[in-house]
Length: 308
Image (cartoon, rainbow, N blue to C red; front, side, top):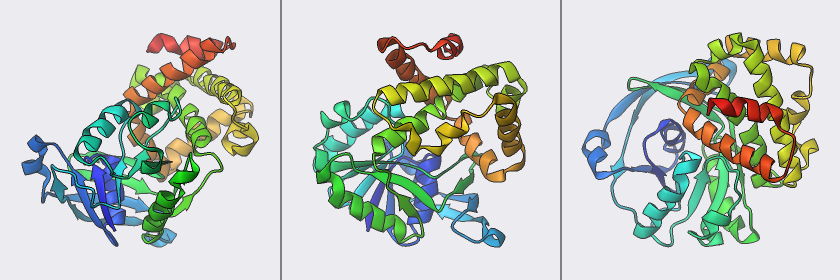
């Protein structure tokens, strides 16, 4: 398949690395980046969870193939952008290819109303990456899971969903298809945004975790966020992570901290979070507004909102 990826960020590069083994992958970049990025080869150090444990740690090189124009000849375009960048990204690309098909690869809180003003329903599906990481200089230091989450909001999107699922399966990535992709994205968003606000105080997860009081408030803010999701129609019983957050803090805290300290996959995933603090803070603002609009009791969310 012919796949276009917007930009050369961590997630775009990570999935280009995986998809390019079986597909023709190109990156869309601005004119000023074309000379720098087109043909550039970067090293990578990736924990590839598609492999057995002995062969997960992979090193190699990836070479970018870039364009500055978009046609409608791509099977689909991946948009791995921050939530607040999505509208502008769609506007830019549909001006160049009005009938293009998109995988919107970002979190969501506001539903599809704004997206549906820009795209026909059959033009897009939604999803979220199963990996993360960061750049250390030119080195891509990351992990990639053997799964991702994908879904259609409308019935008319299912043909595109089938195409995208097939593309990832070709590369040994097995998509999970939640019964409601929007609800999945909302719950996942709540699981990261409050911690992102707490993280903004230190810009270092280890330092945040040393601040036991703030960490506890962030965890409680997550629980409040899940309750907001419930008011938005989410069946929380469908999400095991919600049940885990109901554990007493004295049990949850050491588990979370140990996972960060000992789990190399978590370390790479959280390195990505440090680059996404602005997005998490912006998403949190939306959650906070929803909670207030619904007249809900959200004291912990209000407490950490002082860090915004």
